[in-house]
Image (tube, rainbow, N blue to C red):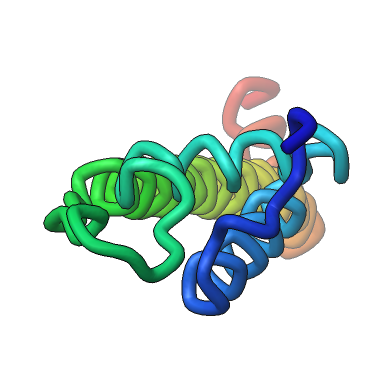
Length: 136
């Protein structure tokens, strides 16, 4: 039997390898690398090809699949937390910028209104009366 021949594998093992390969490809691994990893995982779990015959029945160990699932879940959680943190930073930046802009606008409006009140007070005769007092 030449290397790479999959005839000694059961249909179940072939299906397992196919599913594992698809998940690797979904994560961005190349086709060739995904296939190699998939068959390596199947070999590790089941101990290689298991066609019928006496003495071939060995217990399957799922540690490799569990490890991969845990790694993927941990990466997903890490991405979610970083996304939440960056979103929180952006929202605080936006609100800080808005409040700063509002305060400067309010300050400008207040300054303008003060000038208007001073002018109106001067027009009413407040300054004229002060000049009259100084000239007397």
